[in-house]
Length: 252
Ligand SMILES: [Zn+2]
Ligand SMILES: [Zn+2]
Picture (cartoon, rainbow, N blue to C red):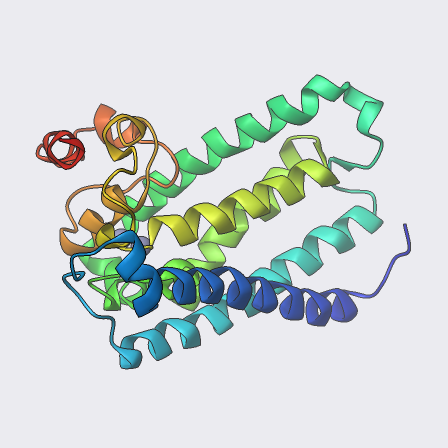
């Protein structure tokens, strides 16, 4: 592997992370929010039309987040070139099974990290500084998926910086985790009324978080803090009691 300077990594990753955001959030937005696809997917008119003012705000915060995550990525790759991370590049080193297991372990850990830091961000003393920006959109759109206040972006990116020093991860596993993060964040912010009614919210929504679950958090701050799985919300009593009931109703 060719090694570059911290500055080179930072600038290159800023471009890659930003491009990823515009492709994933923009592509999903134009697909699910265009009048044509809405008429096809969902003949009833959605309840809320997004405002361009809020979308511009979400994009602005996401550009800052891209800067923070680019610094984190530059730090990780510089760390790798100094030989101080647990990242590895030979897939056979820990066995092929380990690629899948380490992927699953990191998602479970990240979900826990997200749940507890997210609950903390909602503390009245911290909310203004760390999390208000993300909640500007009461009805989130895919553009909200990466809209974090800079301090929140630092906390989120620190998970990735930390994990590469603790758990051996192949580069492919790390990339798979980053893709999962991106796709899941975009899906969680799709908005409740953008998917076809036949979408299997009712059984899928019991275990994994999706737009139906996370849309409720943007309306009601006291519930639904999880990222990937409903586990922590269920265990610690922060799941909206009407949520599973509503899921059932939607599938009727
Ligand atoms: Zn929140
Ligand atoms: Zn959100």
